[in-house]
Image (cartoon, rainbow, N blue to C red):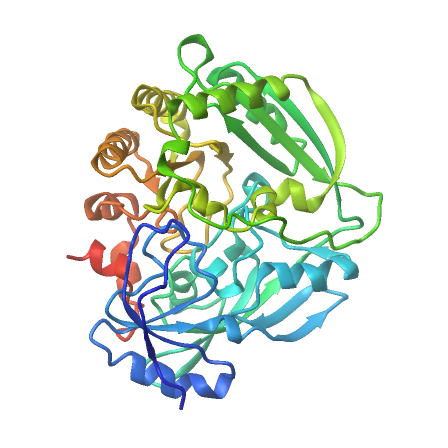
Length: 442
């Protein structure tokens, strides 16, 4: 049987939590049963992880055991007529695209990076720029195979009457170890995208553009200048797109130059952020239509290897919230004013509206409303104080935060934002845990 090896170099993408774990790297399915059994007996139990693109501590298990599932990355079957794919949970979205695109299919839902595993995507019930049309990835999952710490093997599907499927989708890896995922892919006739960029001058213009675009475009998202204030509060560039019907089915994927070292902390300051945001807004200051390949539209940051090092050796926090429609414009404006006043923020600030398509998971993050996502370099207490202010705004508006993105989500806010939490607890595997889960239940 493979062994758990002590490691102190395992980080999440935000690089703020520093942990020590015992890590095993299974390569074959028959290694898992014994691994799950022994790992679940560790003091802090076991967590299965993938490529660890979660930003906080939901993919870490400090003082416990970790099963790194990236070695279990084989395709099992692919029906090129129906687009139904079955694969091991460690297969990445990048590998799915290499298989699917030449056959005329695409991921039905994808986040802003293709370097996530199937298991990780399901565990966080990821969403993308097409939420108003497609919902979350969980809606496209046909079935999930689980290995539980009591030795049982379970297969659950969307018609599961027990509730275990709904608990596993968005369940942060706490219902057992996912071994296989069966996913319904989306047919396409070209790997090109028909895209349009539309600058807008303030937050009100964003909401008008979003309402107009969702009726006719599959994908919508906006970059905003998080430091703008006054009459230009919330200004930015709106991007919308559909899959092209013309063009080849080509895989255009890869990673460009990498950031080799941590960028010094003084690089990100109010002056540099303001200068970048001003240049970006002016550069994008005219309406443009274009045909582009899928990679730069969906995965712009994947072109920079190790881009998380831009925030320095202390790491960063990503803050992603969603607030319901009735409070969305006022709450978003209040958050942006607080961020601008603090002089903190990021080059990449994303604003998007979620649609009415219900999420299937008990702990799924998206709900109808508006989501704002920003990165904040870790400046210690000043950053935490700003995030606390944002928490108060989001909670007052009836919103919630995304556990996959947040390394300091307060337990009280988590419990307030996820009303199905008690229902979820009934389906947890007692042998599974994570740093995040223990922090939520102290």
